[in-house]
Image 1 (cartoon, rainbow, N blue to C red):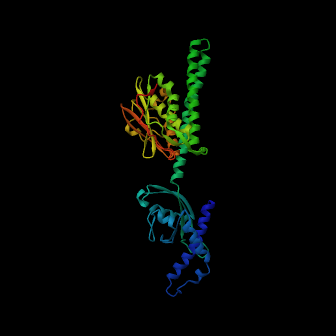
Image 2: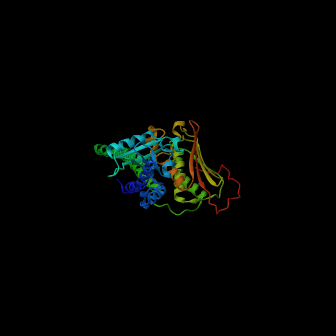
Image 3: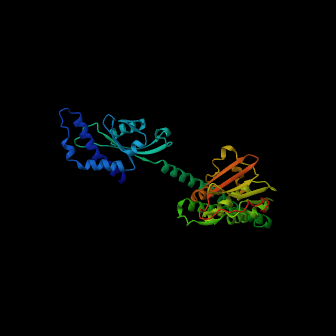
Length: 395
């Protein structure tokens, strides 16, 4: 039993003793109006008060599964109505506790029970038996909401598995190419070709490691830097500069438009990385001799930065998952595009850390528009200049 649960159970015991005494006296017609035992148990009132203030939900069940005590946290979960426990799984756990003495389990609550969506509860049941309590004994259930904890654990497991899988590909390729070079020592042309492939795989591996580090920092591995006013024009110019070479290689033109002079609060390097990732994604999935448009505008207290391409588009079933780590719409194109599957996940975390959001509109065969929304700097007045001409661009 963990110390926190042991403390809760100890408090429950104090309150339970008082509740049991009261019930026994109420069932006795010859009992005095005020049970003398309660008068000598002032700690029971303190225990009940502490239980009412605690975050974990606590329910005390009599030998007939009647609810004798439920703190506000338990009633807020919607699992108790009057003296009845509404969740059959919890009643089953109480029966197992009476038979075994203790039981731990996870119980999933339906979404409509407390009106807050499905929740997962970690339940620790303890039989409250003492020298004066004949069998069957009452039971205490301590319930803690572990929905987010279990979700994070699952994400961590998936993350580790995905990282291992993603690292295997370039590492395995490097090993095979090294063997190929060794076998082609007498063929300079083959050596040069294999060396080029090694450089490509090494670059892919370095990019994967770099993005993993960036994602770890964004997810709370390091404290966030101090927010400061950031010029959106500077962010767009930096992002376009970083992706210019890749765009030129595919004969793509990057066009910058929208409003100028917008200022947001945040970290300039992170925002530049987010917009760069959106542009890099557009370049990777666009055909040659097309335009990619990036623009900014002020709307409802946010700066909206949009990146629009005329590429292959995203199928409807994949649109809600494109911001997941390592998720790729087309796995078969992963090696050709060089993507790690982390770029859009980084964009999402940058947006969240800045109090903003990112969304996507897409249609297969027509292209995609990603919109990054970042809160404007309230201390900086909005520009009074007209929107810039969309023909102003960089390629």
